[in-house]
Image (cartoon, rainbow, N blue to C red):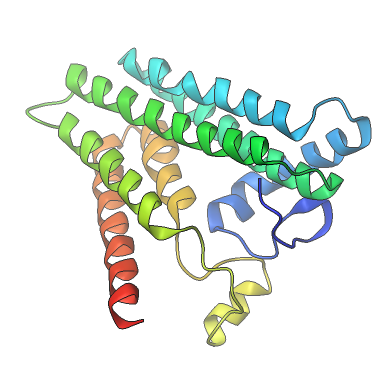
Length: 217
């Protein structure tokens, strides 16, 4: 959970497209309700997100259409609560090192579970070495998360970035967007492997941008 300055109800001033357009319409009402009722603390929401996220992989690993749908829905709900915990912490002025650790653990557990689940799914249902695409995406995504240091939250530069900022949108896709493509959109549409291909390309571009920035800094 971060102390980043945000808008009402703990929303960040700017965020990734998937978060702003697809998750926040659900997450913000939940934050308002929890902040008013005081039923759960941010840490308890983090634990809930972690528990739901761990269930993504077993759902995918059933290698059924129903399992793909269930895993995608669980991934979305887990990420939604992952967003809720940070927003709730900012909205209520509660923050702790334990909360930040729980947040990282939950995020990592959700991605690892989803990645492992898709590997098993493609091992059981794919042809040839399709399962390797899921493994490659999971490894590259973990590496990108390790080196990226999070979103670029500075003042927007350029007319396009400023125009997007007026709608709370960051100019470049991030791991929430790419993960949603691989672990929500791909499974829901059954286009699992094509979604992983696009995800791998986007992650590689992201890694290249981080490295180029480091070299030219």
